[in-house]
Amino acid sequence: MAPAAEKDTALVFRTSLGGQRKAFSVEGHITGQGADIIILDDPLDASDALSEPACEKVNNWIANVLMGRFNNGATGIMVLVMQRLAINDPAAFLREIEPWSLLSLPAVAEEDMKVRLAAGKMHVFAKGALLHPQLLDQAFLNQRRRAMGEAAYSAQYQQRPLPPGGGAVDVSLFKRFATLPTSYDTRFLSIDAASGSDSGSYSVIQFWQIGDGRIYLADSQRGRWPFPELRKRAIDAKTAFKVDFFLIEFASNGQALAQELWEYYPREERVAAVQTFKPSQSKATRMDLAMVPIAAGKVFIPQQDPLLQPLLSELGAFPNGANDDQVDALSQALWFFWHPYKNNRHNPEYRKRSRVIFPRGY
Image: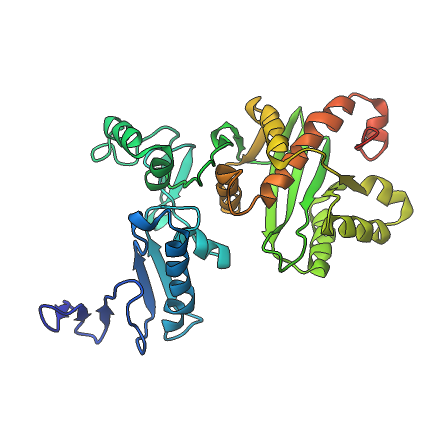
């Protein structure tokens, strides 16, 4: 099955079994072409990384042209191989529009990682370890960091792009857990409801558990859901995770959601089950305050969870990222943990009222 070029200058290779590989430039003319497997190799030039129009142009070409070239859209496979360049590069864009399997390997591990290999094997990439010390040793990486600047280095070598002015949240300060503790004081859902399914923002439902003076993010989901679906997801999550209450930002659709849930649950349950939060401070200030328990080592996120990647990317880009809905839900949850819960956890009445008590003005 040795491949052979049709002619020296051609970018078409055929195999003896009738297969073929064709190569095209990004945004090239591919009308009439078809494929079972599409491999995208560095579709965005590094010189265009900071150009929003350039990123958008490539992303639109992938979504509107290239993805229409599969012989069978249901079984076609697309593989993207690239270094991260910007918060809205093709890697970020494609994961926004549909679920993708992600393998992200930083030059220096920022946390303990388990990388799945062939034949069921696993490689442990320990925090602080170099990805390829023979090729990219620490001295070289330090030199590149100084030469490129923090933003470019973070994107191209650590696969964690930052927007201009981003990076206000140090994601390395989060603690990690492998298994959620079975003992706990209270569980709740922190909900940030988008202003509408077509607003461009997300609705977010996060499942949090508090125990032993620590708080754990056990699950996080987001979507641009119509209001009836948001309501259903909130009710289903309360049942599935056996939480004590909802904590809902009382603004826009959050106000409507709180009202719907208030009407849904019986009188004896809803007083404790439906709690609202009306922030009086800016998003940035709320996240600054949330960094206090994070820096104190009280906030835990899963050790390995593909659902966390959108959250970590959003945190890393804050406050100038494209979205901040997950950040809002997180800072809201940590406000409760560091204030109402912390101030009342030793109050005997706390456990009598479904383990939830909110001070006046909450």
